[in-house]
Image (cartoon, rainbow, N blue to C red):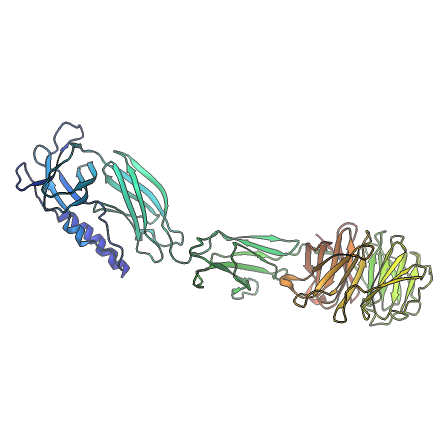
Length: 581
């Protein structure tokens, strides 16, 4: 129906151009004149005879209030035209109603336009100043439809004249043969969801073309988000989407959709709550998978619009395996990297402590008295190397601390019965041990003297998974010690055991990391849990994270940094990987 209405409009305009009344074809006329004038040729001296002069209501234009585009009947009734006589004179009689009118005339390429002619009394004569036909001008521009559509369905109409300019397929238009004047222009479309645009006082100069440049027709529907861009933080495995902000009067929020390109899945909404900004961060992607994103706007009624053009990215790991350092012939109890940049390994199958360099070459090994309680020894035979290169081993079989130098000489055991020791660290001459069952930290001197027992505010419902110390004497404790909604947390204590900080730790999209081990190096802490390695600073800022191959998700153990900034990771199967950025 809208297209038919537009067709009627065009037909009406063309028919109207021929439906004129020849009131004055010569100098003789009857009745009381209302508007009279005289026209001259372009030289300003020679009279212009036989020129058709039109008079129309000033604001006459197509009526767009209905389903179609039709001419006002009032406009037709109130429009008239006459011919100038041999002296260039013209006159309109009192059949014209009172009001404000415009007068237009054209002869060849010359034209005039007289704006705002008032008629207040049918019995009075309004004599216009003489006017000169001058070379016509033109308007041109380009129509922009923000949501797309055929620009040929847009028409350019001028108030007070019965002509329009069509638009080409590329959006360009030219409104030609216009007399020099200022025009009020209306742009109207038969396309859905585009409003009417009025511009006022557009100047047209004689013999010149006024360039209106790009004109954007107002969109009244639900805009499609434009300029969707994607950036990817490899270290944190975070995808950031940005797009242009739509008009707030039309859009209340946005929804973000994602699909896995590699698996050819269907796009699904990934934002749990409405996105009111034009930025969205996604950390839920699986490593080494490619994802495609789209964004849709939601209007104030909750209706969703058309999704944006797609953009995609690969969730690449910030680290990749550069080599397999060691493949043990047995189960890994645990390992640590000493200040000498050597690997100290508790081999739970061979019941030995083994030392390797970071090229994977074995340096030496020695047996552990009493052996390990294998297979329970997996990551429960905690080993730590002090700054003075004293090797400390908690043996889950004998429940004591065994001490060695780097040559394997025993320095004597420390007979502490602790149950399950989930963490061991040494700062200065203070030895700290984490007891998971009691949810306490025991402190001893390295000579065996008991110092204190520390239990902070942990309750029987808290699970403490790992503990370590850093070079500054900070104590780091990892476990289910956060709020129920996000229980995994890290607590940071100063050397005097006053709390420095506590922050939530998690995987992508607050993924529950579960039990794991932690290590610390130069202000960074590494958590190895749920098949992931996650690194934070001491105030809880995420530095990086990455996943191990799927087959090691359930057997991931300790992860730590070597002196070159590489991540060294061990698995239950006795494989120690080195990852490099």
